[in-house]
Length: 485
Image (cartoon, rainbow, N blue to C red; front, side):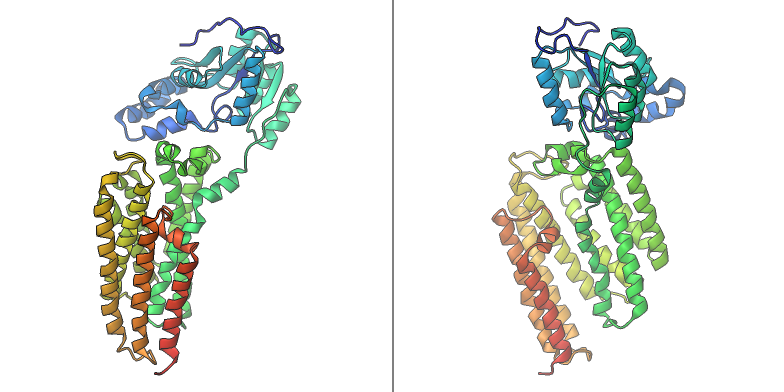
């Protein structure tokens, strides 16, 4: 453990400079270690007891009770690389570096040991919470008034800068940066990487909203394209699904922080990379969920949206870890969008269409898992998934079987539709069957060759062949409607 007093580093150009005290949360790392600790332990009895006792024991004791070195890995934190580089240069020049943080000492010591740059750690313990004025007082007692430089990012750090000999605003808002210039001499400044709004939009994953276009399918299958009220309700339902889905994506990314940071691509997600603060993301999730409920009330689909939210939340929190349960639930989450469109428009879906969609989306869910496993470099389950690489052949068999079953059901559905009076040439509808089967077979081939994105829907949205397939289906429908053969 770091001692309260440690000899200075060897002499160099910066050996006589003011000791540089560096904040942890939001400064050295983009993360908030307290909130992340609370999220990682949110369902543990230890956390529940600490939260209930918080009004009595206070913030410092609360931090001490939930500080769990076994569930905290400092290597996974998203560090501010620009600041780390600066600290390394200062260390080489002989400057005395201090990690001064309101985080609990257990957390602070683990970070200091991992980074390997700090000569001393000043942190909160079970009796004192070193934030704002309390941190300023502790640093003045240790180094004297104006006897240290301080790197921070938050409005609470202004009190520390008032007592510091130099300020280093790091990842701070423009308002906080301006205040730092007013209360202290600024030694160096490290601007934020990107705006919170940009990171929030990325975390909401608007590209995934393409899945919600399924709510419009019942209008077409019911041959009700001219029904204005159906279109209005379908648009409201589409927006409700988009808002609720984005809210759940935000919650999912919060619960998946550790797993995402171990993933070669998902570690760049806004929460995992620290680009989006947890409080901002969780507040946005609440707002989006409320918006989804309001839109669902307007389109009379509240029960459907609530069921979708319940299923998605259960999937995010625990069911994604259950083999096979996860893919069946993923398939159901696609199908419920179709069902929601039927409820909103008043055009009930046929059992044939529901059966086709169930097999189709089960196949796509299995394809998604196979694509993920293909990128996995070790045999054991990881990333909150219950599969091993040895499961790939059987999952491929399940998925291909589901894809072919969907085409068989589609053929039976087309046979039923072929007698519908709405079509000028109903026999042309049979052209849809081989087109859809070709599309699914191509997705499986792309997956086997390692081309597949983690989500086949997102992959298809960027795939020119999938666009041709979609256009071909629409062309066949148009010809069946308008041309008599």
